[in-house]
Length: 165
Image (cartoon, rainbow, N blue to C red; front, side, top):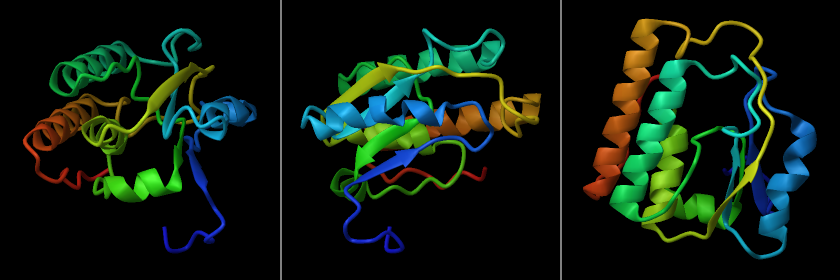
């Protein structure tokens, strides 16, 4: 955060594997610019290219979103990495995870901190290259464990773990 200029108000995250569509960034920024949201998630569920999300990814995504709703009372449809957040909101979250669980950490902490969140449907295509996470059984298990652990720790009021990614 210190590397960002002090005039940066909003930060956009997206994957570098060609799966997100950068031209959709204005859709993520619009609710923030209108003062309606602090965090906007690009939801892939309705507009994902066939085969871009594996069965374990879809299942894990639904499970994590369900748990966040049950534990924190906020509904999400996706944990996708394509998102925008106000800088001051991100600083309040005190993010820890530098691996598999950063998206769920951000969303669970946003819910816990009662940030105004929103989702916009975004397109999602198959990635270029093989995933270290969803491309292997061991990667899927490690990611799933890290994500569930992150949700649990935040629900109990602890800091999120720093999972390796």
